[in-house]
Length: 389
Image (tube, one colour):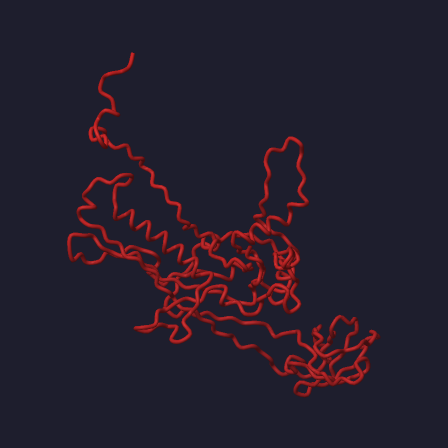
């Protein structure tokens, strides 16, 4: 027998007699994660000025290159030009290129070396323009005077703080009304704006660029920080160019393990830093995952396929692979995280600042001021020009 009593479907248009049933969960789908900032962690100190500076130093170099296209007898010549003669002293033992020969420097005149070839019975080889030179060490004479003092000058580097801010305004009526899924609209708006600003901070840490003119800021020039990618100048590798390996695939531009190892080795050659982080976007992360796919084995009872590389270990370091959606699609970034800090200006980490109310509303702004200290740019590197599809 059909039910003829009062039911929800007979309550009239729009069900005015039925109380609303609204979940207390608000779903947010917009990306706001900051994996690189989380990996770097909070800085142990704060910047104390809008112009943040630090010092860098280096040891006296023990390498150079032959800079002499006019060598007549490459195997027997005892005099040739180099790029930086001030790096050499009388008594230096040197090796040129890939030769097993050791030579002894007996004279230095500006950028011209005079040497004894085949020192210690080693076999002389052909010296060519552009060959690398390694200084093994200096041999001093017993009882000789002290050599002239040599030293390096410390370099001062700088970056600028950038202000990140967003306004929050909520009417008095909105604050008084009972809200679905939350208790305080003002607090909710603060949280939303803070998520957005943290997202923007990571994006600027990776990609930000300082103003070309008046980077310290003026009444009309906004002060912006220099990010990690624009700060790297030494170890910038372009797919298939200047001797760097080409990628794979039809266009020879898909990331390969050979390229990662070549970049890590080049950075290792440049510095004592230890690259411990590889930062990539989704596309290049999938390429790294694919390095081990073909070598993976499975049993007949396996029901799970795992295609994930979170750590890449090579002869030149153990690197955590960080997936960041803010990385350019064609770029892979290599960093020594111990040399990078994201610093707030003292007393200016993200906070909520109430503003004077000029009407029936609560107003304020979420504000923070940050900069990046990236020490020794040649301890980091990047690969560009990779496939983006």
